[in-house]
Length: 120
Length: 120
DNA sequence: TTATCATATGAATAACTGTTCATATATTAT
DNA sequence: ATAATATATGAACAGTTATTCATATGATAA
Image (cartoon, rainbow over all chains, first blue to last red; front, side):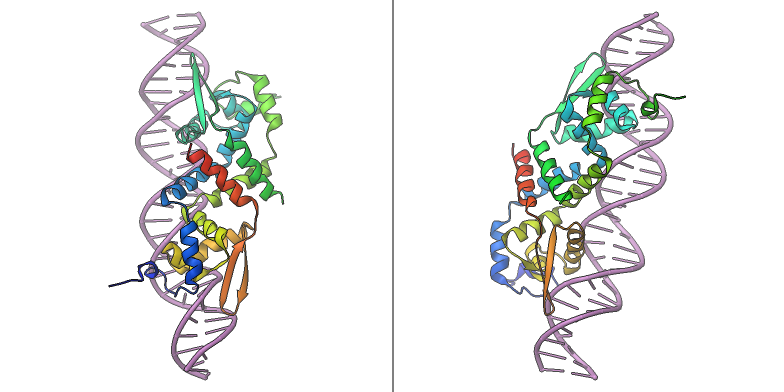
């Protein structure tokens, strides 16, 4: 019987078992950690950050965003798909024009907190 | 003379010039946007998120973290280097043991905001 | 000194990601 | 109908990244 399963893939010994135990108790569920990292992965691209900042001002169509960022319509469209999948933006169609808008109230606060770290 | 430089790399026309102009005014400096994305890139990995959550509990040595996450000491050490470079963690040496701790007060709040989005 | 332990790090590899290009779809204009 | 416009999307490519492996460093123990 192996009662030290949690050490198997570590090539050194647990030095502070109590510390590790407590940290393990405070650790959120694996699924939450995964989704949190996925969210930040979405924020971890300059183009997507710019798109979201643009949408802080107002809803915008794909063409406007592409012009604003000086990028291809295709590139923007691909990124908007990712933002859509993450439920960070929503869209409405008006004829052939598609308007994108923010779909989450936390984004601005998260970005502000992030800038606080960057500018410290 | 080309007075429409900002449209060059976009294969469609600006539809709402006033909207684009306003969004451009509200857009933070390129450098800030880049660093913000870099920060979120660091948060965009499950291993690093777990390490930071572990450090919410208390300072921990590399070996403890590796055991807690069931990962190689080498993998953890590589990730700690990235966290160190981003000034998110600090460390102190005690003999051959190196203790890592959080070096930023914003992280917890950013993570909490992120979880708010994930769990909505 | 020699051995052992905790940590760091460079190289290699596999997996992932963002943009481009070509093209498709759908709506409006002629 | 046909053309033009706005957007979406699949494939390909280049660049990036996380882990592993082997090994190095630095500190303590024997």
